[in-house]
Length: 185
Image 1: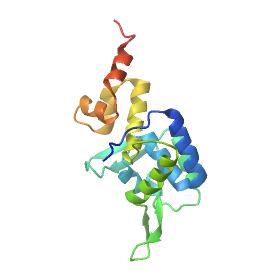
Image 2: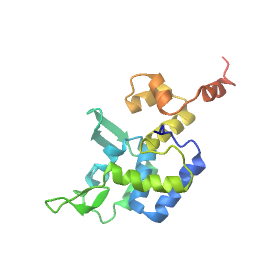
Image 3: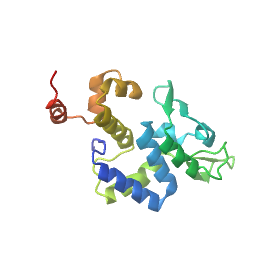
Image 4: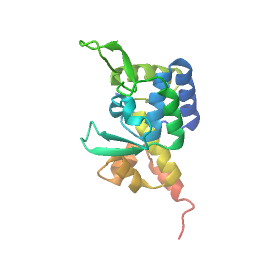
């Protein structure tokens, strides 16, 4: 079993986003939401249009932890969301499935559907060790690269320790050493 890793190469992230945008706008938006919020895929796919329309934050009860969590929507993400939801009803799922349930109501796409579609594109682009957690891990990796604030990232992820967070985002000893190379008080 392969270990899911963050995508540490920004060019690969750009390539993945570009390819998804060409192929399927819904999966592109799923990718944009995941890369830019740090939310778990299971929490993202269950969002409704009303959860994001004209909002400054996404408020959810996390599927895994059952904790209420706020995720800010920055201006760039808001613009992407606003473009995506044009013509969608507020009660609709943000990422609807094409199939209807037994009651004739459209549900949201499943994690498996999202995984199969995006994994296929990632493989064609040569992105290795990709899984649905790669989005969240990539968010964490680049957040850490920009801020170096592992304590805040630990809070964002609701992790129990900084060590758990470091392992989760694939921070190696080499990267830690490199980040301290020019540090001196």
